[in-house]
Length: 114
Length: 108
Image (cartoon, rainbow over all chains, first blue to last red; front, side, top):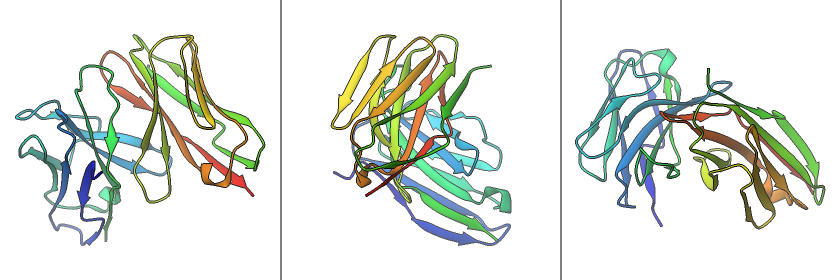
């Protein structure tokens, strides 16, 4: 039962470096999401993709870009990493975004920006 | 403004000591309320969805209930393996709003 798989699990970057976080789901879900989780802030939505071929901004999109590569894969890119982007990043998927289907999460990428 | 508040922030129980976690919300157009469990170093794991006031869901030692203003997650005779952070999220007409969670520790 793979579910949602995120890579890498850990990453340390220097300020100004770029990197892409990968996410893949094997549940044939239409919708995918990227969150960040910070102490005292809870889960905050960065970007989401309601269906293949579409992406939309969430609550905190600045400094990030996304690509919905196909139905299975949704990547998050940091073009020029900043210390404020140090966080745990979670990818999630759901059957659909418009109705009340639960989201299923991967185990996260722990990212440190020095 | 739509808001979800979970209480208490942290709870420590003895094994077998039943208790309840609270998720209160003020949202326009509730479409669903979700409970998740999150273990350290892991992503949130889906537990329940509740759609309307009066609804209840159960799974092992956990029971979730919903009123028009809040939801409770009742934990009956908890075991140490129930230790985790429990998150509540509410879906309104536009988006999913997350609470900050309750950190539960169950001592043997």
